[in-house]
Length: 227
Length: 252
Image 1 (tube, rainbow over the protein chains, first blue to last red):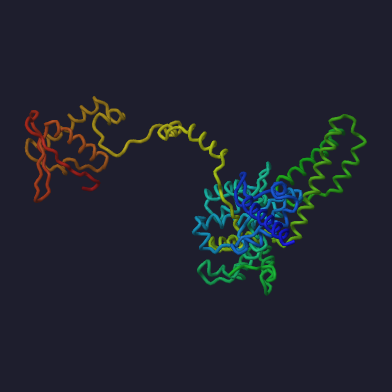
Image 2: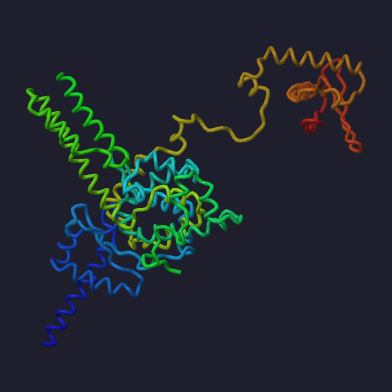
């Protein structure tokens, strides 16, 4: 009986090790492994093995994450290893990523989400060019499309890409962006309150944004920002 | 009459296409009304082309219904925020604040890049077909510019700034002027080359340097006062030549 248990345990360990290696090593152009590939490598019970693996890599600050495919089937899902917790700003900076690049991506995601998940490329470019240099906008959008953060169709409509779905907690991002309203005055370096700014906007926008005791669209229960 | 009906169909198709190719609200299309139009015209279609156009219009309307479905789903999630609010927020927030919000919601993918035989082959082919650096941008930018150096008379002739005849005549003009001004005596170099235009001043200094090198004029410097004097010679001087560096700048 014990031998059978030991054998089963060894078998599971072997499978988990194989799953880890499969997920870690990039095969094709994009990271992650599709469900049908995992089924072929690990067998039908690959989800259970991934669960065990996710628990094992927790100590390393990682987790197994699933990104649903277009048709929502298991085979089309993409599985990948990702950081369990977001990195700190310092860690992100030391990895060589520019703050401006991150700001462009954050703005793009927020804009597309606010436009019901699709926005014309020109519209987005015009919007971003009000804040960022033209060359950076053109360069960044192209790069994020290539990396999979944004998706562009043949009609030049941009959507949220698979990589954004994989790496970014969009709900947290939107909540954080909205909840940062009170920092406006300090960011500008002079004591203007948000209400002051709102009152000096066109009437329609002012009515829409006027503070009514709490910042619109932010629920404390939704946010789980890491301090 | 038939043309007008066809126009109705084309208008439906065009409207649906414009909604699909922009981020406009798909609910701006009144599906019921458009279907009524198609239904009304359907018995009048006789030819295959007309029926195909009708089916295309129906397909485009179906696409709009699909978009409406996605629109509602998106709006139902908590990700929906009024576009105006988002635009205002993004405009007001600093880049640092935007980046911080992003990083706090970011879970980077952990992966290892590896070199596969296919990748190695691709790199080899790339390297093999890569043209040498010296030839790569020749088509776009021509040959590379020369390093900073000395421009001699031949270079100026080659560049088309001077022709041989122009230069010779200019040298003669400057020599005659020097002879006339100095009357065979030493005169101040800087006073001689002085001109209201910088280009003219430098040109005179340049030509004078050739006259001196050619032995048609003498130059002497006073190390105590720094004064430089020149004097024309009636005939070409012989003897050992020495180099004197004189800086000529605007205003001096």
